[in-house]
Image (cartoon, rainbow, N blue to C red; front, top):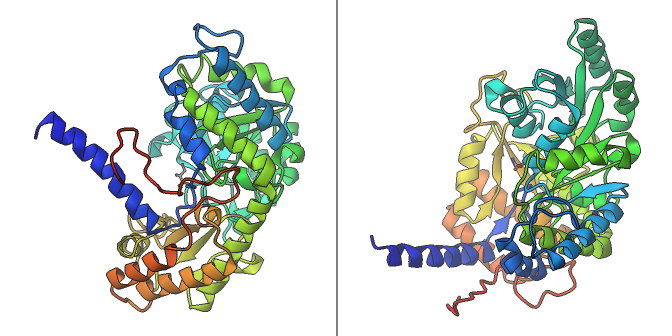
Length: 441
Ligand code: DSN
């Protein structure tokens, strides 16, 4: 195959991807659709430059405009997250977590975190599972005791575990809250003082829920006692892919050094511009959006439960966040369900649920699926649409209808939802392909 035909293939495949998402229902909990302004930032020349260091103290020339944008970005992040200090340079949530590990711990130290089936993220993981914390920073990980019924960390059992670890000469240095399967707030205010009294630092990984925290509709980790909060800039917060750290001022110097030179060189300046735009949108529209996200997540949970699905967290109203977890094992394994729904243009991911590893389930065939509503909410969908989506899911998973038939109905349903909402300018379609080469869509 010639280089020119592969060049053309890439351009064609990107257009195909846009067309597909334009007629699909995107339900991946860790994704969102950025505004046209964020997409414009990603196309700018900022992405071709270097700006190592802090604004005004760069290692490179050529940063006059870049510095101004980065300062705006940090100011906005402080305002949005009600923080004394913000640094928008981490290039991802994983890099943000690595910077916190470097700032607050040494290799060989112990960290408390949630296990993957209890919602923890790979970047909090053990070395033997190739998790970032263990593999890259050499941390030893101990998992929080977790209550499946409450779908959150068990406070009393955690205090007992920290006490025992301290007694056994394995005192934890860092408590990591937050994660990827994240239905209800974690007990930061219940545990932060206890952890500080045990000489621990407390970080909250708000990758998933940053947009909800920005809108004031989830917990407020820094107020509740966390030393720092790491996050992704592209999940419920609707920016470009990347990371942000916010903290108290007293930790700022440690964190800055841990980010540069510790964990970044180029910090993807087009993404910093995009983060600034997303944060400005969040300041203006974030509260209304966060409320609707949570209402939508509750509505889809109720509709699915009404169809006979086992939605986790029933006792607590299924969810207080942007996502729900569904045990689909009485119909098929999560991997099969994910694949069948994808054929119907309903895009979500399979999910390990608490107890899955113990019962010998592989992550390719877990018992669950995870459904997130950040992207469909940004497309303007509300509670009624959640019922329609639950019907589509039932038709594929329970009624075993031909997914291609459902895909047609999904495509018709999507016709009314082509624009990004909660932004200053949505003149370009959400998934409209804008070609610099003048290639028609
Ligand atoms: N693993 C991703 C998720 O929660 O989907 C986040 O990095």
